[in-house]
Structure formats: structure tokens, C-alpha cells
Image 1: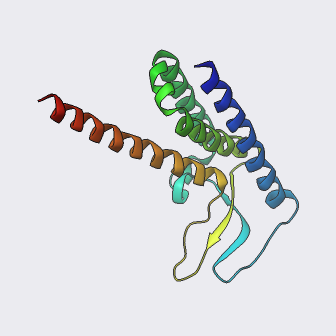
Image 2: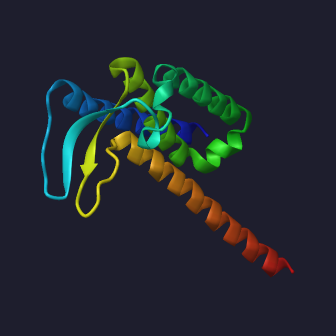
Length: 157
């Protein structure tokens, strides 16, 4: 458990610093690049995914902190969940806490990846990508575990 916790902390710290440094560059240093497929440009998201719940902008940071606290309490009470999912949980915490810090620092989440080739997509950031990767990893592990369990049941029948 300690080895996984240490690795989790190292991954968290590294990715959190990278994400916050990049956001700082866009928010404070005027970074901007226009490309034919994707552009890098500053945008503030006052809501959550696709700007949903932006009417709660002032309260979202507190609501999200409460959700993180509840998740952390759950993990303390269910250490086996952390053992099985420590990488996706770490990525989820990096993305979530980095975006929450943006809300306290900038008043909104700092987004900058803007896909505009063929169709326009929502502007997003590294933290958003990490959150999506973590969800994908959790789903993949669930599928693989279900298949393994099915094979074991079949073999024992």
C-alpha cells in the first residue's frame, strides 16, 4: 500500500505542477497559438463540462471540494478500492483539484485547447484530459475484471 501511495503522490505532484504551470502561462503570459486543426487560446469556464452549471459559478468550487472530501472519506474507509484503482484515482484527483484551484485563483477554470478542424469542440485543458483518462481506465478495469470473473465462473462450473 505504501509503495502505491508514494507513486500516487509523485504522479499527483508532477502532473499537478505541469497543469498549473501551463495554465499560468495562458492566464498570465499571454500564450496563444493558432493552428489549422487546433489552437491554443485562453478561455475561462465558469461552469463544469461544456460550461454546464455556470449559473453556480460562485459556489462550484465549494460544491466540488465537498465532493472531493466525500470521495476521500470513501477511499479511507475502502482502502481496497484505492489499491485496485490508484492510478485512475490519482489522475482524477489531479484533474479535479487542479481545476478547483483555478476557481480559487482565477475565478474560473483555465481552458486552452481549442479543436476546430471539421467541427468545433469545447475548449479544454490538461486536467480535463486527465479526468477523462481516469474514467476510461476505471471503465476498462471494470470490463476486464468482469470478463475475468466470468471466465473463472465458467471454469469452476
